[in-house]
Image (cartoon, rainbow, N blue to C red):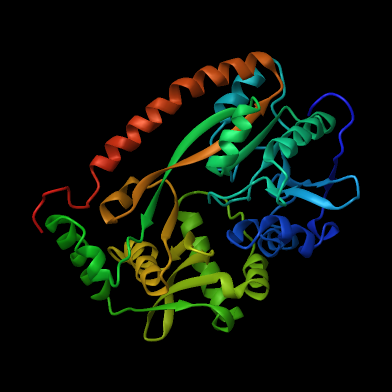
Length: 385
């Protein structure tokens, strides 16, 4: 924060209800559902964030001289690095080996959600760097070693980078809707071999005797959430992970934002056996959690990728963001896109080491993305259908 008195005052709140839905959403906007009051409050009220998971809410509010809310941020004091999907365990280990303490740290993020979107939520006329500077001061007061804004926007990445934050690049795989009128229209854009492969996968999934349904709004009953929570736990168990999200969380998002939810369900004889949870933004469908109680070839691809593409085409959405990791998505029409995070570290020695690492990681990440893009299934210029 600049020297001298500031015309803005920062507050940190342990409960988002202390800020209120109207003030929060006026800054967050309606484009990305993950930074909405409804989603963040459901995480908190369900116990998914808090001492149980090591995510301690410190929701940030920046007020102007008149006391009006000028900016907010989903901020959490973290006592671990779980549920973030931008990995800094090596940084923490280096700090600990040097005799320092990396935790607690201040995380500006949507818990358990590797979904790109705004992290410095501002009213018009307010810049992200001003809020970022205030968060650095807050981190110092809280005894946090560092501040991390993960899966932020490209604009925030550039602005905070100019302000001296360390910049990191990652990658995800998104599907772009190039004006397709049907799934077959999308397939026509692919090379013949890739097109045949996707058709075969869809046939094999359909051969299991399943029907597929996209549920939203009042269709999201407690019984449907019971089924989906079972699917969610089955995936957690297979991956030896932790069940961050509680059963109550799904009831709360179903009650508070069911019009933003698109739950893909695979059913046999009317009984759900698998599901994929998506949230809908203004122009995108965001894939999150999935699970199945049966091991059916290609069902994951059908439910998470192809059904999402079908939905996006029908609804004229511009893209599908299918979540973290997974190079196998490339051959199914999802192409690599950069993701962004910014980091402020108080310890100068660690900050220099991390900066050197990121200076070499960024060009390597861009080269990797270019190589993956070259392997995409889309027809190259001049290639026959």
